[in-house]
Length: 314
Image (cartoon, rainbow, N blue to C red; front, side, top):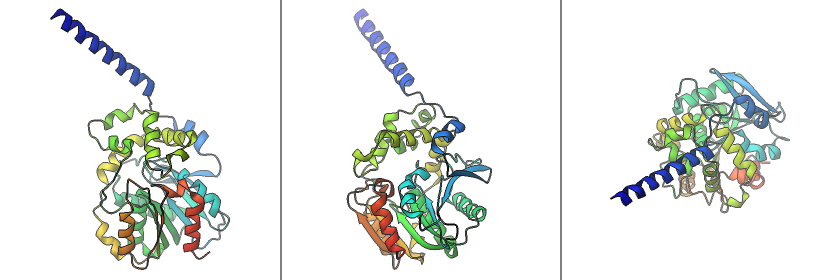
């Protein structure tokens, strides 16, 4: 019995030491906004006041463009996911990229409301703030869901719609990034508030690329540090709680010229959903990049932006 007690004590001690070590190595409190701005908001970044938030955006290219491009990123991403596209497109187009509320440097909604209706109201405020009349609206993943919903409600403001691995339909994911899985787990999600292994972010980013070898240390740093922006982790938990896929039957009502771009290696929102968008949106065009993943605009901006230029008749 004494030997058993001694063994148990030893196991408890080992586990305690492991736990302390794990917490010490992965302790990741929120990072100050000013510190993040220094690295991730150089010119031409700017901040505009909307609904009590300082919204991070970049507005580049010719101001006389009659139909600017407005780019909406996906969950846990930021305007940086469009950097490659901006470089390819800003010579001919006014290109506006933003950090959506709850992500990037914009940070959380002050009232904690992450419903799609609240995001739609935010987009209306953004249009008013930037004096936008009509845009080519582009959205990836969650940003794609916001884009097609906005095109349904405000079709007069959307000249062209581009959906890139867009959310909307129920999906049978083959693989979900670890960070998303934890944020949706009511038991484990609170741990993310102070503990965030960089390896977990690395795993999540590699998971959404068709070729994980393209994921660089700088890319991981960006996702890791912007996730630690004050309020973003709790915002992610709340967004998963509040945003559902209950409006997809309306997709058939879309009458905006639409381009669908998809990565054939997308395991989060499989390519079957691209086929469904193409079937339900009359007159739409679709392009599948067989070797790319869930963020094809980030993984291969040259080929994917060329598909947009072709769609716009350039």
